[in-house]
View (cartoon, one colour):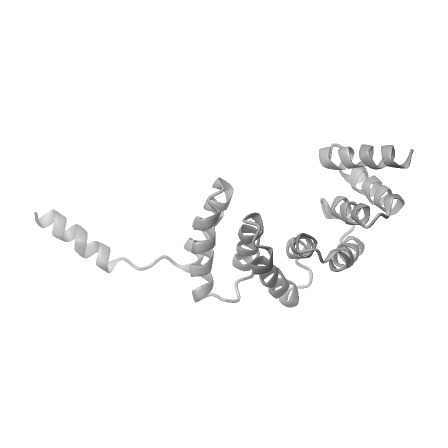
Length: 169
């Protein structure tokens, strides 16, 4: 009986998890696909560290994966406003704009990101997708060639290249 009471007292004395611990747990939940739990943990983390950029990006990603694009968008905007060189946030910001139908904004962000970070994985592929959506087939082909120069085995880029080439024939 005494052991049970000691255990209960220990629970009451236990410190709540730190923001970092919450982010670690949330990252694990994201990898497992437990998006609702990841969002909950990341929101808790941001309560104590509202300016944490890693938590903001991860929360935006979790919300995006849940197709909650309008909720994800401000998290990426926040990160880019503070850290305009955060390429992960920039790509996700463009993806959110695209998902919300803001094609011109997505295209503008991707063009600037590709110009500033030409060796960033997937930047030329994502730009090619946006250009293709806009009907700019030749520009999309050019971007795909850039992506495939740095990543020749990029399966999705190769598939898009085949589709665009068959369209232009």
